[in-house]
Image (cartoon, rainbow, N blue to C red; front, side, top):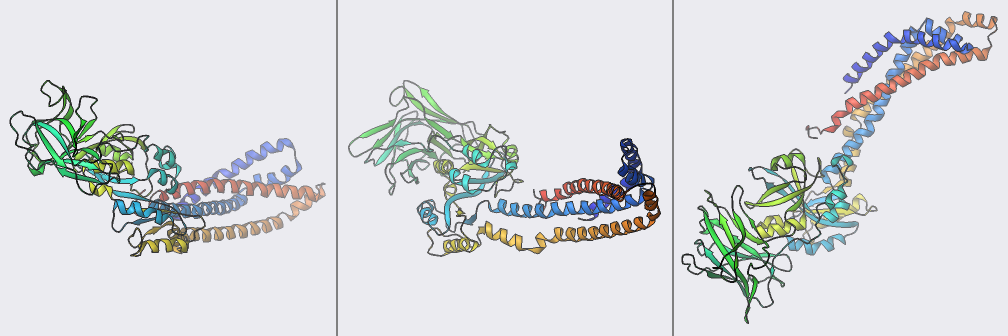
Amino acid sequence: LLLSPLVITVAVGLVMLRFYPPLVRLGVAALLLFRGTAVAIGLRRAGRSPSAYARLMLLLVMAVSVGTFAASYGPTVGQSLDERVRYQVGVDARAVIDHPDRNTSDRALPAVRALPGVADAATAYRGSVATPNGGSVALLSIDTQRAASMLWSRDDFASQPLPQLLHELQSDLPPGAGLALPEGTTAVSVAMRGADLGRSAFVARFRDANGAFDDSLLVLPETGPNKWVTASAPLPRGLVAPILLVGFAVNDRQGVDLRHDGTLQLDRVAAITPAREVVLDDFEQSFVWSLYGAPARDDTFRAATGSDAASGGKYAEWKWSASTTPMNRVLALSDPAVPLSAIMNPVALAAFGTTDGGVALLVLNGLQVPVLVRGTATLFPTLDPTRGFVVLADDQLQSIAGTVGVPALRQPNELWLRFRDTASIADRRAALTALGASTSPLRVKPNPLIEATLLDDTNADPTLQASGSGILSVAFIAVLGLSAVGAVVTLVLSARARAVEFAVLRAVGASQPQILRGLFLEWGVVLIAGAAIGLALGRAVASLMLRFLDVTERGDR
């Protein structure tokens, strides 16, 4: 820490000792044109014998440069340590939920927000997501509206402020889609023709009013070649009305042979009630379905026209290509939030092979889900930029995760808290302690991250705060003391040596004020030049030496 500034300071000092005398002589020659008595008395002396002044200036340069470096180092290190903590925690407090459950979390959040000192609370999901090439990046799903006021950020994290960046993730249309089932529905049916799908592979997927998803097996009758048959699935129990039919899922591991090229046609999706059958979609109007398939597969799902449709003149046709490994498919109603809106960093963009504004394909449960990169950030609180990360809106991820059948992504595993400004550290610890109790409405695991506590510990640790700045302060005091002693000694010796000179000046008519002004100018030039050079040197050394604060002790940015 001190060797590099020492070498730089000595180098500058040697250069200054070499060039100071000729520069002073040039300055004296220029100032004598003004014919001032003080200039003649003070600077002529400095020009004739500059070595003594140069040595004093060297001490002054060292003192000011070390002082400037010390003044920069202390606050910068303190800010760096504080910001590392803020980046690690991200919010006022962050804890891992003990038993993640979407319904429990949603019901418990109002009670958490009512805790003393708590201003707001939100849940988030932290995990990883696969890329089409088999890699993975970090995934963070957040409540974008609440997170905008909770997350700490810095201007250089992204090209736009964090609240504006998070606003890009929000959609004007609510996520989720499906065919609404009429009241009293007991089952759904769909006309099918084509491949022999077996009896245990095709399921209908439903979503209820609480956002819960459930599947029901489609019962397929024996099929003949190129014959339309009607498959039906009973409505799962426990769903809360209104209920939506989200789509159909095919499990390749349960008897469906998708290892060879094949075609399946669907028509006349209907709800069965005790009184009647209600057609939900006969594909005669606009096609509002999507296919979520496996990576590197050439599947298609689109509307087709033919006189042999089960009803009307149109139907849906799904064609798939052969694959060597079992792979699932989901035929679902088109979600208005798909492609999902995402924030990525450059590492994630490279992993997905896309750019800002482009479309990437996340792999969820072996199925590709498109996302639109709505913004990029080099850094995002709580996330490691070296690994790559994707940030999504929680409501959008919950919807698509249920559609493609990834229940784990629908369970928030973190609790974020924002405290009131008046809440003390003790109040914040008490709130997290209450949340860790067995009677807590949303129990969290031990050792939560509380920003204020970590900041207090960091600021109170002398090995972190005073290790560098303390050494530099001692060095500054030592050099300043040496400079003061050197200045006093130089002034005393100079005054004694120039006693005859002062007497002659008085004899030829110079007054005491004129002699004092000359001395002030003589030493003022030394002080001003030394302070200016020392300040510039100190700032240069600080700019060079403080670059190590760009990374942690492990070398991470």
